Image 1 (spheres, rainbow, N blue to C red):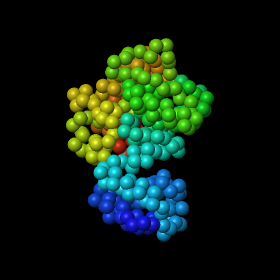
Image 2: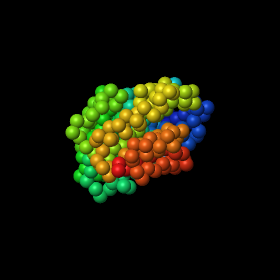
Image 3: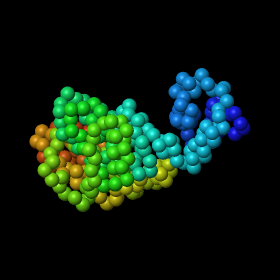
Image 4: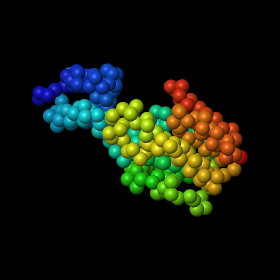
Length: 286
């Protein structure tokens, strides 16, 4: 781009360059995010200053971001930031980008927990988004997060520290470790890996090429392995009357409901997300 390019000009360049991959609304939203990060502009600032020439240093960053978007990199990784349940979180290629469906899971937990002081565990915590969002509201509760990725735990710990939200994170491999010692919880929640390998061909390239596969995929021949392992842990560490919440693959809602019932959980509920897909399950330990 020429020297002194403005936002209005960049808007047209972004729309032309990305129209085959994104719709116009998505393109405009991504440019707004990039302008906010590199110019310090809010959405209204972007509109008011659309004809103001941009400094060369910022122009270069906006151009670099466009190239990375064209290469398929998610805008959240380009910026290294995402807003989840109103909380700014760092993200990188060691953690999944938090989705709106996961915010719905957080809301369900809060609807049934606000006003209580609980011991709460987030399993497969990744960026720490669930644990941090819950602790931010449940301030008198003790909240923990576990993951088998040290790099993900580093991201989660940094997010808690930056936002001054007191969550304790620790390393734990669900597929190899069978006990959490003497810990017990009122609430357990998890968004574990649940995408079958066979479904990878249906996924967008920006997910396959950039997001961590170990946090996404499970083997086709055992798609519920993480759910079984978590229920195993719950039998030893979830208090009677305690609740367990899962984000799920919509293809396995019935199987996960049956898994919980077979293990003696009651008040098992399968809930749809805002797109009317079966995406969440809750059970109560009898």
